[in-house]
Length: 373
Image 1: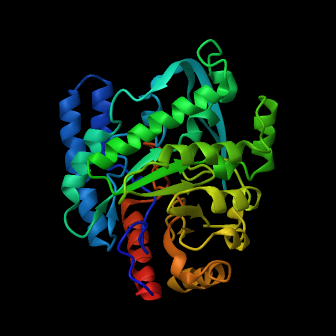
Image 2: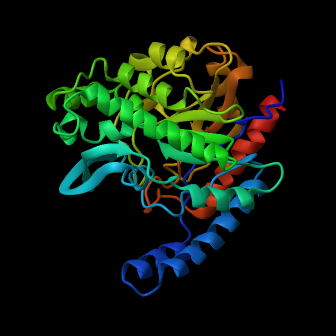
């Protein structure tokens, strides 16, 4: 096997990591006004330094800041785009797990002004991370894809007085993202991941019905999303590797959607102009590997075979067997290994311990080394 010297790496991970207790306490103290924003940032800085060392120590060649400065993987970014604001209305997302059901509630969004990029979002956060990674480890920045701005509310969230023409909305959104891409690259970013639940959700007939009911074109929505992501990254600087991660929801070890990648696979793999795809494959809920037959040469698939939803450790033999199964549909040279999602897509985190998280990351690094060398 060829040694991969650029992202995504043979052993990789999605991005978010369990927040340490002292960081959760500091966030609560900040919410109560007991400490300053600067004091909270000092705690965040220390926690990020430690978690970067952990990623290096287990054998990973990429490192994130664990999304330690965020409440959620996507809305912290989206609300900082010009023209978008939270509303008093609440959005409920229905989740389920092996034990039952639960709901996640967050503020809805409104597009009530032209979409712009008024700052480099997470710019200072990335600069800190990049300074802490050191030689041999690539700093990875994760942000939500442009699709998530639309998927959260659809056409109903967009003020028709601002965007009577939906094409103008899409053009402005992709332009703002393209500006973000250029700015983070100028800061030294060489590994950018666009997180996207929409492209995985659309494989679930129940999710497509929800979109149809609110007036969207669920049968073709993924084609629009692919076009807009491509527009956002079309002019990315040389040396910036872009991946996308697709999952079916991740909140306190629960999920929101089910189904394989069959519905979006042909367009997704053949048309989306990213360098790699992080795919959720930790259980039967994610379907089989057959859709990978549409992955063209030169694209990398990161198999999310290790679950972040439970602490029980997978066996290397099982992981190797599933990698072999995937390699029947796409060459082994184009495959990598990772967890199926983040460990803490929201500040609450999934139901497993820090030590279990570390063991899973170490398992991924060891397995990848044995499979690809």
